View 1 (cartoon, rainbow, N blue to C red):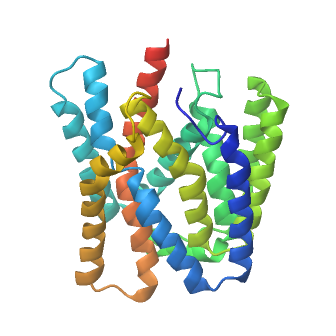
View 2 (view 1 turned 90 degrees about the vertical axis):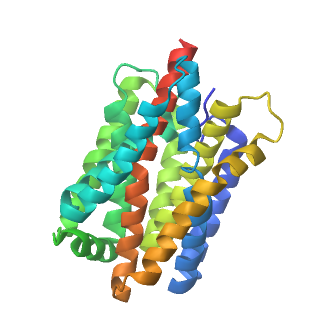
Length: 301
């Protein structure tokens, strides 16, 4: 069974403990220390969790008994370049698409296998992801609107993010009630959301996003992928995963390093570029993960 943050209960308490430490670090740590730790986490665990997409595509092709997985590879590469092109020519549309895709992607990873209404999980997954993003943007408004304006030249009011937070929260609660999700799970989720709100409030934008992205999204996603690719039959599957992902991971880091080195950008635009880089690799990764979860559900059925 594919995992998420709560299907392995032993992870919940340690992850909550790390989140509490993150809140303390956000409150006491310097801006530079927060940024450094966040970038290290995102560029290591965060990028790694999306570095085996091509292996997942190959696995899906073999499950469907297709000898030629070229169409999947072409689609993947096409989405990468399409994302880059859209960010270059119409950045406002690209940023909106990145947030919308990420909302669904985060919700899918977090709630997959706990949401029984398989006919239409899109709204529920998207609402949960939107709640995370809107909380972060509302509580880190100044840094958020600065990046949005640098990328899109659009200036959004603070009320936009607060309203988005309220709508997504009540929408999430309504869906959870209609889905009859157990009260224990809901209480655990409220605890997590409350701690994330404190994290977003007391840390800076990059650290708040980075800790959530690495701890509550990337780690569970890594476990899901390892189980999908290798199952439980191969020993040292985590090491095998890292070896397989190493070249793609290094290539992604090299591309980012070369861009930073040879493109002359003002210092205040570097964070915007960093999030644009994450967006470009998120589009194809979210597509692959959706195919992976769909494939797993089909096999289970």
